[in-house]
Image 1 (tube, rainbow over the protein chains, first blue to last red):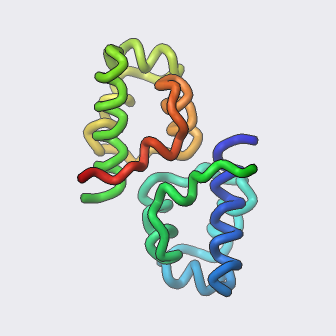
Image 2 (image 1 turned 180 degrees about the horizontal axis):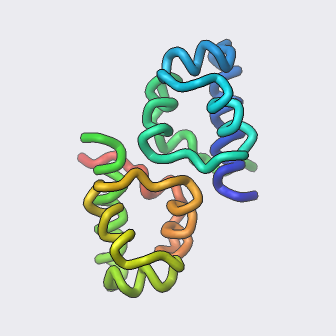
Image 3 (image 1 turned 60 degrees about the vertical axis):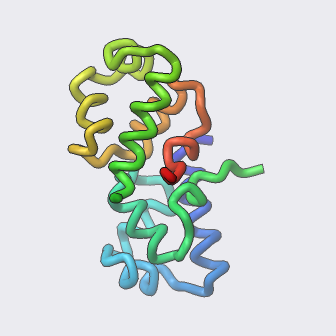
Length: 70
Length: 70
């Protein structure tokens, strides 16, 4: 699995575990909803700055987005 | 400290701990040396795909690049 796929799945799972919609996460991270969708689906290779905003909005340490999946 | 600064310092420290020059890391990751320099100095917000190549070249898990600094 490519790293961007791992990150996308982690973001989706963290977002769902907090009961947030893509719209709500987008608003909290000051990003477009379509951009959140593209990152979750690994269509786009997000930058560090964007990951920082998403991690902050999800209230997790940035490295949590990179946890490898079992 | 912004996340890109943390990542840049981690890359520099890991690279030095392995005795690699910027040129050697650039060659191993198939990136330009100037690009490695910019990432280490946090002048540029690298993408997930680029971080994946750097982590692979440094032989570390990608999340190691995001370790927070004490």
